[in-house]
Amino acid sequence: MYRKTIFIALLLAAVLTLGCAHFPATRADRWQHLIILYTNDIHGHLAEEEAWWLNPNFPPPVGNAAAAATIIREERLKAAQNGHGFMLLEGGDIFQGTPVGEFTKGKAVIEYMNMVGYDAMTLGNHDFDKGMEVLKPLLDMAKFPVMAANIVDSSSRQIVDFVKPFVILEKGGVKVGIFGVITHYMRGMATPEHIRGMDFEKETATTRKMVDTLKALGVDIIVFLSHAGFRHDKAIADSVPGIDVIVGAHSHTGLRQAYEDPSHHTIIVQTYGHLTSIGKLDIYIDPQTKKVMGFKNQIKELSTEEVLKDTLVTAMIEKWRGLAEAGFDSVLGSAALAIKRSGGDRESAIGNLICDAMLKTAGADFAFQNTGGIKADIPQGPVTYRNIYNVDAFGNYIVTMEMTGAQVIRVCETSVLGYHAIFQVGGLKMKYDAKKPVWNRITEVTVNGQPIDTAKVYKIAINNFLGAGGGNYKVFQGGTNRTDTYIELRQSLADFIKQNSPLDYRVQGRITETSGGRLLK
Image 1: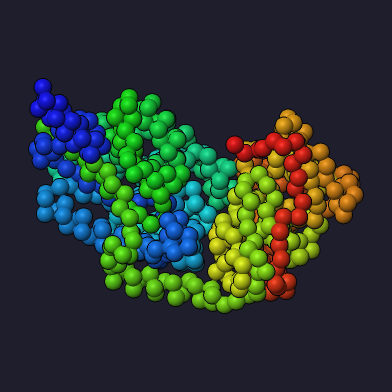
Image 2: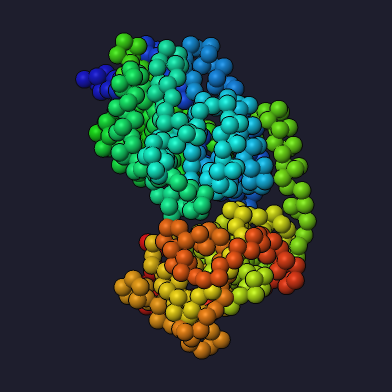
């Protein structure tokens, strides 16, 4: 009895180590192996950076692309030596978010992906941030298929011609069908002119169609590249049978232990993004039935103390950095104290700074800035253009238009709907009650201490993302005399900092919630 108990305990430990309760670990050598290395949400983070999230006081260096290249080379060689199938996949949002990514218009990232031999990727919402005039040349440059099966032409309803719906790859004797899907919420995420003529069908319906198609084509394994977020991936895995693996993206949900759907045993994996780690999924496949019998998943850290950096990739990145970041560390001015964000439902010091810069640049009466578009704080001390870039990583420009006071109140109501982070404001003060019904939450809007004149026409300044009027921001479509200034928000901030240093920005009571309630849960 004692020996039997010990055997069961050891067997359970082995199964848990593999992450799947299909078979004992001692039989692992009987199966075919498919090794999937995966990344997601690179966002241009090729260059080495500091892991402030691990230790904010003494952040260890992370090798990013150059360290990932070392892991990729080693794992590809090991798979070949062992006769295992091997593939390298990416979940989308590849270039927008760093100078190297943005100012090379994604070319540096695609060059890297070509160098290390990616097999396939799907598109992400931020891959559309610079429009089709940037995206299409990247797709032409890629030496691997780029997929998004749910992007259709608005007129013909056919899948657009610049992506593939799926690919079939033979890897280690396994016929693998891979398809990709992007979030169907693109209307609220992308600038409308960047996705004109396209519709984005719902993920679940497209997934069912792709699974049926790939099964009819006789694939052994189905891999789904999903840029929809972990919550949606779980729902799809639960409702659509036949998917073996979902490589996720969009939500940056690092899964150190792969999630296995209890209904259909679909395996879901995802890294934290920004190429600070790389995932490795080892799938065990029955050679007769071609069924997945088990798996082991790891997220491999890319610390430079543990992983050597590939010298060729390092040289390539430094070449692009020299071009993209020229002048980035020149000092523009100084901050007397750190100018910080304050969360999604409150006024922030940095939001006040941005709005004041827009007011000054545009000569406007009021300014609005979406809180979700503010991506970093400004530290105390010298302020460089790099700091400004980090604040506005999306590269927005200023749009002006005219609105009546009544329309401005409507903008303020839109700000506190609770569906998205609040708007930061300049030139006015607003009070709201989060416990009141939507569209009736604003209790006061004042200008210089006086109630706003509902009939008066005011000039407002916003960024082009809000000005496009997508998603929940249709309120801005009601403005008149619209002008796309094409003055970059970064340049507006740089000029303002030069003229007003040392900066002393704090929360000033521009936005007040009066009931003690909260908008964002």
